[in-house]
Length: 271
Image (cartoon, rainbow, N blue to C red; front, side):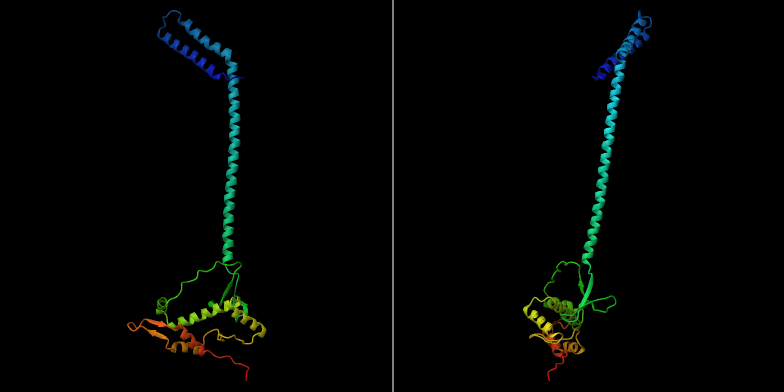
């Protein structure tokens, strides 16, 4: 069915306007001849249009209503699809947040040690249990995965050594450095990278716990003895500044030799 509603609306509006203007004019001029006949003719024109096109107008209006209903249903369906997409996006965002939290927890777990060990000699490793009194510098953490390579500190100089020792007794500082170096040496012995150290491990494996020491090494206690500390403090290997007696220089190599000389010597079975 062709939609002629605009055309009919235009014709009907024109007839209604003609009727209204004519009625208003004749109400102002009631004595005008044929006034009633002209008004009735205008009204009859409106009735004629309604009789001719009334049913068609109603049918076209119903068609318009049907189209509006279909459009409304389409809009509602589209609205439902949009809400579904919004729900999916919301769910995906929550899932991503949960994945991020899980990833953070995994990274945190990977960065935390699963246990700690200490070594009592190059080939003797022991797991640390709760309550074990093991000094912090001897504790070696064990991780689930390889950890990032630590940043190597800058090379130490005479000036920086001065600054580090000014606020502490130099003997105490030296002992702390001694123990740290020993711990690092033991860790290196557990994974040899030097042929001489590797040969040392082979000798130790063949001899069991016998004190076989390769050339260039000596056997010293894990902790410095009182005699070793006294030897370090009594050595004349600290040079003071002539212009400022609060400034001094520590000759660590000479102190190291003095402490080695004062270290207790292991007993041997040779007679």
